[in-house]
Length: 103
Image 1 (cartoon, rainbow, N blue to C red):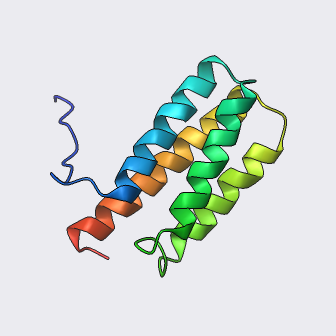
Image 2: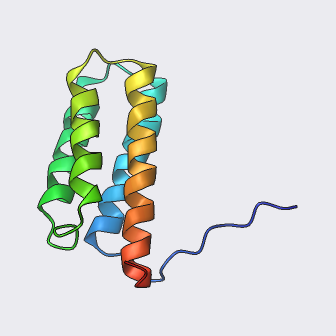
């Protein structure tokens, strides 16, 4: 079986862009885990996602964001980067579900 790419909406809104920026930053932090500027950037991205009205009313989004912010408060390292990667994957799936009309 071939891995088929996941369908993505043709129009990416602000939350979609923020999720992608966050995922890119998390991928970078996996390579350079102690980059303070990038960690700060991720915190700002999480704040922006949480503040976006498209994600308000979603019960899961604040939980995911808060878990990720908690991870950011710990010492930087590969585990934090992995938690961020997983968190942004979850936020992206939530965003895709909302865009598709499933939720």
